[in-house]
Image (cartoon, rainbow, N blue to C red; front, side, top):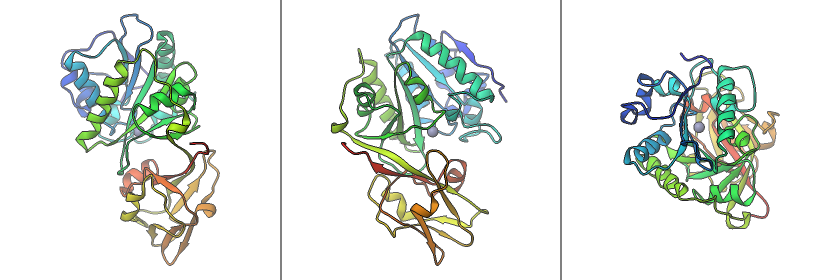
Amino acid sequence: MSSGHLSTYNALPDGLLECPAARLREVLSGPTLFDLSAGRKGILFITVLQHGNETSGWDAVRTLLASGDAPSLMLFVANVDAARQNVRKLPGRVDFNRAWEGGDSPEAAIAEEVTGRAMAAEPLAAIDIHNNTGRNPPYSVVTRTDERSLGAAAAFAQRVIVIDHPGVQTRRFSEFCTAVTVEVGTARDPSSAERASAYLEAAFRWREPPRVSSRQLYLYRNLARILVEGEDDAVTPCEDFEALNFERAEGGTVIANVRNGRGLKAVDEHGADVTGHYLETEDGEIRLRRAVIPSMFTTDLRAARADCLCYLLEPLPGS
Ligand SMILES: [Zn+2]
């Protein structure tokens, strides 16, 4: 297992591009920053595998690098240890994408070093590529709503979630460059990597990120994150609910069944318990108390326990 050590390269080691995510650890010793900028400013900064089982970003990047068409860039390949086991993060370790604004974890030390090197390169834009576990339309996530951040987001998808979650790379990087997270679909769907490739190819041509106003997009903000509580298999997520990702779900819609206990907990962005505002349990059914727009809902309980069952969104006014 890697400690808080960042490896850096100025060229790609032999055999790297042939490795699927699960085999990267055979070539790399842990989290690795590739500085392929040749000292140029205004390059793209790309991050993949902050979550080890979200492999589409790496597949997109290695295809583009192998084609020889990629321009100067910086590439951070984050959680290769978790990728080897095809898990979001290793047990007992922090979530890499919560470690970018301090903390005493090895991940935070690496994130700090990566941030310093990225800042020095004065990137044009930073793109962090993720997968969802459940079926969602493609969407972008930003922490700022200036026209360049929205332009970088819109170049990937018309659906954009605006978050203010401490510790995520996009929030940290937005302090010194245009920064966006793209959620490209499920890792098991080959079109997710194709979608990521198409976006990166477009971004490679930017002289600067396009400018887009909020009126041209569907903007959302997070109201709550739904966590799974209690003993194993007490909760059964409702399969039909997955089709409601990014759709309006009316009050009364069943989100899960529960055998005993509360089953699900809703928390807001500051971690406050808001369960009673959004959920009610009756006759073993957990229902929405009010109309919301779910996202990232998954029926995979293991994934839901590792992260969350879903988010509840509302449209942002003016969009
Ligand atoms: Zn992720």
